[in-house]
Image (cartoon, rainbow, N blue to C red; front, side, top):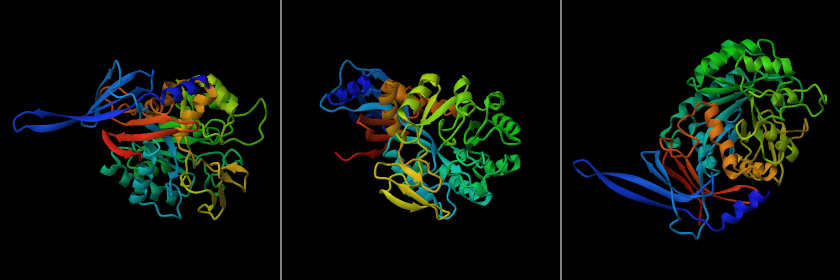
Length: 420
């Protein structure tokens, strides 16, 4: 908490400056624009300048002092969210509401406002027809120049998960099924071969072979919405599974205190864990314990946001006509099962929450929301403030509950600027 207060104090003293430098290159005086951004590094609090050219970071240099110290803005790599079911009224997984390329553009623009420069549209448990249709639409939108590479690939969460109430969460029971390799290959082709990760319940019949085959294809396997014991979890990791999807969630409300899926995932040192740090999915003490076990190296901040994120509080209907409640404080509930229905909070809030709860530094929190997911999915071109990386940058101040995004750059282009 002391570190968080210090960061907020610094945020009232430091500043950001952006300007352009033109340089003539070759005969004909071809003008190549370069951008230089000054501000406070999120890593150690020191003033730095970040030079950008052709969509990439050219160099990061320390400064003795900033050009103007009247404003306070930090610089960090853009946030990378590995679990986005939808945003701002746009659903990636519903079959009833038609997904369109414009809808994908809208969701992306709204995520930029929250500092998310890369994300994995996530399709959850549904019929084969809906999954094929939506993956096809997403594949067509993925390379839209307007998105500037903000969608590197997709996340398939289900349908190969536990059918048991509680463990399956809000995933519809009628569509839950056992791992089917041919179905996955069909979905993989429909996605333009861009499914980067799949969440599976390892105790399901055929899951171990499924995990092995996905790993051999280079698809990251996550364990989630399951009730597997230690032997099964450890074997799944040996077969290639490497991350737990939203650890502590996708779990029954009542579990055995000794034999449950939480301990094995915490105990396995090779397994990373994604955490939803929105203040609703996990208690503060759960976040603190999970972080102490996994550390900043193997913790990933995720959001699990849905199409209801960024909408006004109230009651809504999902595609099956079931009531979903968005409370005034931002909780998204599925009253029929007394469980959460995903999240309505972007990962920018998770960055602040995990600092508050664990005492980790701003640099560590940003790492868990940028560099760690980038490394997990082989996105070696982004996630860090280093020369050669994509110039995906966010400029922000630290608020009490969230990051306040001032500007967002994607591949060197200013895509969002907050009103003064």
